[in-house]
Length: 518
Image (tube, rainbow, N blue to C red; front, top):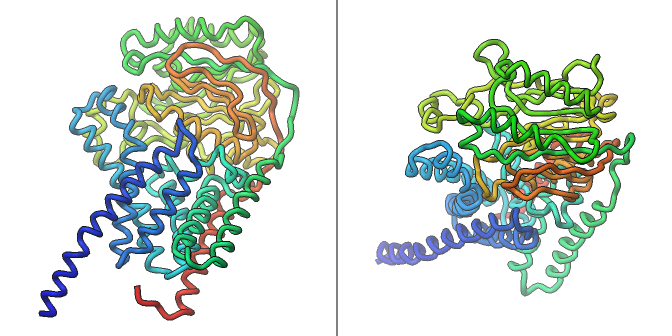
């Protein structure tokens, strides 16, 4: 009889468990919609708060982790589905295999919220779990996703708040600090739902969340940097060369025609920037006349010129690089080579040559640039160049400040997102670049092939941009900036210490109190 009753109870739990997983997955899809091209920071806090309630209500750490994984599957399955385009449309990998690979990546990324949910459930109980353990574990798992196996921090939670009050924490704690602040707001909301019959607790929790938001809004008004040097006019060129043409037989001629026309403007520009791999072959293979024309452009127009191109050095060793030409004849060509390469796109993990071969990626196995490469000295400014995917990694961007006397006054990102057509990848990447501007209090210039070419001010606001999938040049006057944010000084160290302290505090409270029946 007892065994039968136990079996019936177990059967009664299954629908509830399945519904919880479905709810978590649906909340993950909602969370994905809170990033660019829309901006819904409040909705993201609500979605994560509801997940925290689902995790808190789980009967075991395994059940909690499964709910975190379901949330992640909905989040990444929806949020990075554009990867399918690069593999199938431009790969061209068979559709079923591209879909499987995209789903496998989403399933892997979902392990990080699963880890956060399971760890928080195990280390704390009651209000400490909702208020401390879940927010801290959530933010730490986001940081871990950004560093493990070279990292993939796309759609880190803090990016959804680039237009919200919590963005004020970015110059102090970086994107993961913003993620933590948002998770603390979510934790307070979850705790308020659990304590809805305790008016005093509701007042305290509401005041705490309001204080976090108000402090973030106040920090947004702080000027962490100030103008440095004379204003300069920049021209950012967007060639809009489709990916299937870019590396085709006519790709070089199409690039020469497009950029030769767009580099010229109606007025003088102090700095002209072309996108990543603007010319789709190694510079040593360019016709001699084209190499001379690029150098002569800078001299004849009194304009500094930066463009992306591959460098073969030595034979069969390729670098995804940017070259900077000064208008003065006696100045050497300056160079930046990409450090953080894209797995499967720019370097091939061991055992996956067969997979990359299916995508037919040109120059798909590259070399890494040096860990520290000083800013380029161009147009009276110190320009820290980063290439495409690199601006996902704030801790690597601030490496350009290693020599304080040569600290950057401008950031410049050169990208080619033609692999992803007109998908959400383009506005999502712009949102990421805006966070880098906030963290460093520096303007970010973006010159891209198909979009989004833009100018971002030191407060993370988009000053001007070109429409995606159009050819054109963006001309504006900008200023360089000097000054150092706390994040530039200590990187993610302050965030890690704070999150670890919160998690340790939650665990300590559990040890002091006897565990209550669930």
